[in-house]
Each structure stands twice: as C-alpha cells, then as structure tokens.
Amino acid sequence: MKVILKEDIETLGKCGEVIEVKAGYGRNYLIPRNLAITASRGNLRAIEQLRGQQQLRRAKVRRAADTIKARLEKASCTAEVNVGEDNKVFGSVTAQAIEDLLAAQGIEIDRKKIMLEEPLKALGVYTIPVKVAAEVTANLKVWVVKKTE
Image 1 (cartoon, rainbow, N blue to C red):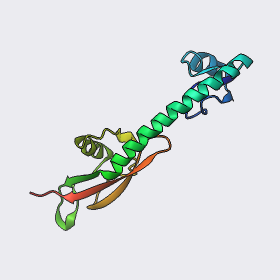
Image 2 (tube, one colour; image 1 turned 90 degrees about the horizontal axis):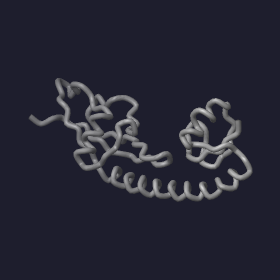
Image 3 (tube, rainbow, N blue to C red; image 1 turned 45 degrees about the vertical axis):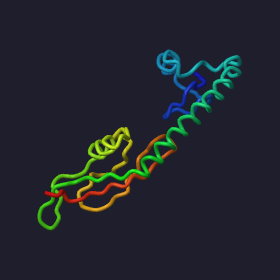
Image 4 (cartoon, one colour; image 1 turned 90 degrees about the vertical axis):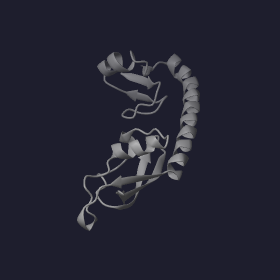
C-alpha cells in the first residue's frame, strides 16, 4: 500500500514522502492516527501545501532548539559528591542528577536527551552532549567536585 506521510516519522520518513507500507499498518495505524493518507493524484497535490506548513513548523522548532542550545552552553552544572580516601567518589552522577541540576537553574530538559554513556564516577570537568532537537546538540559542562563539609 502506498501512503503519503503527513508528519515526520523517525522510522519511516519525512512529511510529504510517498512510501510503501504493509496494508494493515497503513490502514490500521497510520491513516486512523492521521499520520498518513493514501497516495492518490488528488492527495499528492494536496500534500504540497502540507509540506510548506511542515517546513514552517520545523523552522520554528529549530529556532526554539537553538535558543535552548545557547542557554545550555552558557550554563554550568556543579555536582557535589561525597568522596573517600584518594578522592574516590561514593556513588555517581547520573543523567537524572544532571536533569535535577538543570531544573534548579530553570532549564527543563528530559533526562533521556542527556547523552551520558555511563554515570560520572570521578572528580573533574566533563562535557556532556545534550540532544535538544533532531539536528541540534548542545555541549553542557558538568563539574564533579568534592562536597564541602
């Protein structure tokens, strides 16, 4: 079954693309959720207008993402952790902890967008990539320091 996508779907394609999907997937999932329409001549003409609207939406999202990126790159998070002998860190700094530190500064970012390969388990300065939008990634500085008593 050939359908025209009305929205960007990460696993299928971009808005306005004509793609081939299984009939059941198109009929039972994409079309009822208004994510796609059947590919006919009339629909192909109508989708051109939808593409223009989608480009405007994408530009708006991109501008908002660039604003958040600028705020993230200016921000600096300081995570205070308990340390033992030889500056051995007890526990670790996770994406959840970084999300909480950013929320304290007034920046709302979902922890799933913080691309932390593994929790930070040593003192130091780290540059953590944060995926703000599909094509926008910011670099956040995180300082892991010894907790003062």
